[in-house]
Length: 242
Image 1 (cartoon, rainbow, N blue to C red):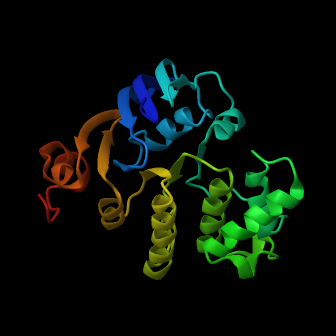
Image 2 (image 1 turned 90 degrees about the horizontal axis):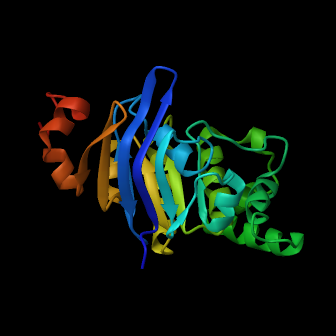
């Protein structure tokens, strides 16, 4: 069985800035992989390459053994790979239910079926009472939860989750983490970028660390925390694990 997601020697530069350099990694079906690194390390750029929003200069991206290079984001989504965004992207003039239905329509053609599926997803994520609310009237935490619901509605095998906890209170973080655990329990693979270390450590089976566009470490959470390069480059010498 091929890896769910495989990257080989992926590189991307913007002018003179080397954003991603020679990145190779794999994500197995059913696992949760975390990716950490300082701001500007290339994490979101890498997610953009995987999801088809950014074209790499070199390298290969395979999903279920098939190349994603040259495919549009909507085509990649229909293959079963979707994402959320660091800056929340919702259709503000539509209701919560309509936002989720847009995700469902990536695979479904009947509005009635898409509506029923979307209602079930909102109920599972505890958002059924917000179904008729306009997306523009949601709090930040609710909009982030909506993005997760819309991604889930595309019936994905893999979700790229880009900093969905930024700007949230501890209570809101716990709520989003519970939603992610629900998704993981369904057998959906998660590839997470997150700066809240306790969350990334508790959710991840394996962690990848980027710094200045390069992969500097990979392993279990315990292995990564003990890695001297990670401590120096990301966690800092004053970290409790240093």
